[in-house]
Length: 288
Length: 307
Image (cartoon, rainbow over all chains, first blue to last red; front, side):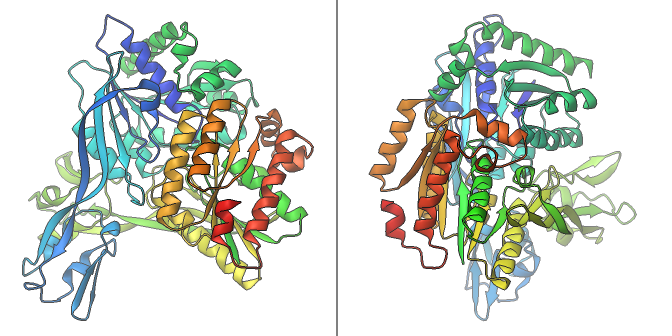
């Protein structure tokens, strides 16, 4: 089973919830410790909470065109088919702008003289290892200055696959656009973390729409319960979205997470609550 | 004309609450500013600036492949060339998953029966509005859409055009979280970036990445620490990092319940409760920023570094 933790709005506590859920599972001797994938490759933070020892590393690259000038006839077909404006033919020169390339390979396929070779262009790195509590952990890191997060997320999901029966917990990036969709794709359950404020509600509505479009069963966690207004509650009631957990606003939690502690390390009674949360999500998935 | 962009790396550090306060303070200081919300995935600035929409435009983002079942002979070449796993047989027909499709059109050019065409997608809308504190450009990307970077560029272009036409000295851009495509679009052409961080391990980690990104694109940057008193050690760590890197820390905004109350009330905190501790410190940061930016003069990058 894959559970993706997402939010729409940033900073609502996605990583706190995802890491606490993973730790809660790892502390249950009756089940396999989970596989944790940090897909927030622009701002990956889960390792700060779960503290894995990294053992494996792999570069993330996509294939970009490299043009053999001796074979190229400057026909311009490659530039014509490229939807990303990666290639420009200017008189006798063919220019390639690697950061615009999505690695689709269309230019290579259409080149009539086979003058294009594809070469890897590194845009990020993947790392994996185990945490002290036995969680299999992996994350992707987008290199600074690179625009495209999606290939890093795609390759992370392909590189790190679960064992049979192993629960996968995915920590998604904020927002609702392509990197989020890539992190949510193939999830069996979407856990949306929000806060009871107008910003939290506005972005929860968008995230809930993503869930609807992807047809994934969804549950809500209200974090910092009590700080704002009742908008989120009302929305969940109208939409029939189950509120699976409420975490009150509490100075000790704010201080603990600031230092990289999971909820379970701050308040051990959360161990049971997260194990129950997993059971509840499994029940909803089984009902589908 | 100067462009100030507010960033954070990590989401939820308070970018939008602070940007809204800057909009209010610029207005009360008679610094005419155009506002742009570049967080098109989760646009929240409008929730605290009560904009009145004057103009709404469709944003056509990328294109998505569509296979004409009448012309398709089922050879499967499209599926073979697709590197985004977007084409598969469903109900005995080759079909495109529009969410997985990257819009590269490789399949279109390979199809032997010309059965595939690209269809433009309505990816969202952008708006020109009048807010309490000046013109606001904002957008709404439809959920699960691509091309948020392009929509950010569109919003900023429109803000720039208006600023040039009507001689506004300042554009204030509320940026998205992260460091990828929409953030790169948000910082392009900025004269200065303010990174709003919080004293948490995650906040510090992501601030460092945001600063590496602005350095990569040569944007002079300064930092302000929000909720500075929730973890003293973290705040000290940020200050010492910034000292080492010669980056000015323009202020330390304490945790203050008024910020959330102002949001619930739909107002910037500096307007809602001007004498609250957070409002006072945001005002202090704003005054330092305006000195550095000097909307009517050039930006001195060295001054930004030393504060």
